Length: 194
Image (cartoon, rainbow, N blue to C red; front, side, top):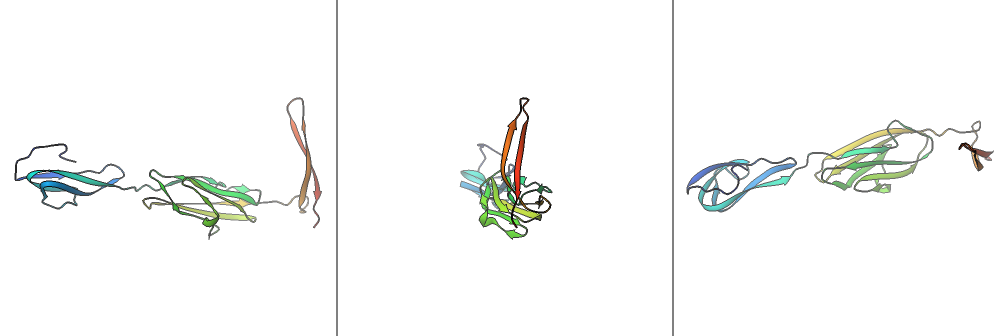
């Protein structure tokens, strides 16, 4: 605020005043007490006051967040190939002020699945079973000021059949540790009945 601090002025003085908002704040208005009157209005950050006696002038500011949340740690990673039908779709997010948890929306292949998602103030987690193919994910999250971020990514489920196209079942295994620290895992498999 300019001028700032406590100052003495003659009666009937007209003083120009101004206020500059810090980062993430915006000027709202001026307020006064005593015998100080605004000449050019109280909603302009640059105005004039008429001094007709003692009083104070205060510049009022409001938190004004224009920075949207940041989304990171998406899973499965964009463009990745997943070799099982069961996966967990997830992401982390953060904001300088706070996340509006009620604003979080997760869509998989265009379908809103938010009601089945674990949503917290720091991220989402959605365990799901999906068919082979490419799957598109869209996460929308807003901060408490309403600034939105939309993160979109895709991944491919690619489960290959084993044993000449016939499904197999692992029925046991043996781990052998050698003297030089090598481990071998042997699986015994049998074909499932079709």
